[in-house]
Image (spheres, rainbow, N blue to C red):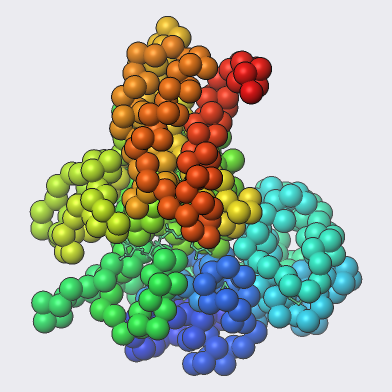
Length: 471
Ligand SMILES: Cc1cc2nc3c(=O)[nH]c(=O)nc-3n(C[C@H](O)[C@H](O)[C@H](O)COP(=O)(O)OP(=O)(O)OC[C@H]3O[C@@H](n4cnc5c(N)ncnc54)[C@H](O)[C@@H]3O)c2cc1C
Ligand code: FES
Ligand code: FES
């Protein structure tokens, strides 16, 4: 059975745990305010809020219900647009109506839900953070200016909020209905979710993280699969620092990384890097293990962690072993792990004060797109020389690439234009890009060179002048 709260109603369902939340909401519960647009996580028409108790606090994040299994809703509060209704229009709906921010209305429930999530997030409310909250919602017909005016009005009202309870403020100011006040107590009374799915007849289970890859690739068959739900397992969650090492549970999400004090302390440009990765609801669902095992040659976090020389802890449930991420990819979608093994943990050495990290990504459009080519670098500097270097690149071969020759070349080098040009030349001998919808092989090879230059001018701004002078 799957037990959770949907709006203000308790749900107990015996449907297969791999059933899509979107299908459950629309076809079982007849809550048709949640729309079906792309069914691939791109448009946000199916947005819901997912509330759960984390470290004693009720936390809400947005999600695309078209990629979420009901098994991942266990023990949580799922909010659809109907669950945000009050008598008459709520404050968010009122702002959209006043600013003419809705036309055909198909996308509007998704915007309402994402903005309800913004209201509950307790984030600083500015016109920019309000727009960020709807970065996973696409509108085809209204035009975004009226939506921006409406979100700015919402931010303005929220900026009146003092340090009070965000739920109490939302209810008192007609953003949300009163039943939200009791949700935390009701969630605490739900049976603790049984996460482990036993193996049946020795059959192999499919590991499921957030589902943002599997439900796109295997949309029609996932509800029939025997699934091992990884997303909520406590032993696969959490980001910890011990000495100079950082340990991440396999089910840590991109949002968990963005909000982690350990990452914020050691990666000053983290927010800038993560802005380039998908949208808020996808980041809320996408796990790091899912990104690594998906083995896409352009997976952003794969490229990120390759340049951090990350190590993977694999387990088959009985035995564990470590594999360097740099040795994990054996060929296109071929991994150095058995079918029974799952990623339990990822660890890496945190950048020291003299270690500089940078991530670059070029896509066909800046936001909400996967990379044509991406790259990351980690450089440790002593006495103006590079003493350790790790350089990675995606989109330039069948697997996410660790550029071992270019990295080795950098050891002991001075940072100057010649070093950069020679690194690029060596890196180009290690890649085998193909021409596809994301660019020709020649273009991708050129892009890699430009991204390597971008690493150096970002980390060492003085170099920019030299590079520009020589062009
Ligand atoms: C709209 C959209 C935008 C996207 N944008 C980006 C982007 O900008 N950059 C990017 O890199 N990716 C992007 N993605 C891809 C995807 O979100 C990421 O790859 C994500 O990290 C996958 O994680 P998940 O938990 O959702 O994976 P899932 O779909 O749950 O699983 C993916 C694979 O990993 C396996 N798996 C999951 N957990 C484990 C584990 N612990 N051990 C072993 N195997 C496991 C699964 O069996 C499956 O094979 C996007 C996807 C969508 C839908
Ligand atoms: S239907 Fe488009 S994001 Fe779910
Ligand atoms: S109002 Fe028509 S798609 Fe947004």
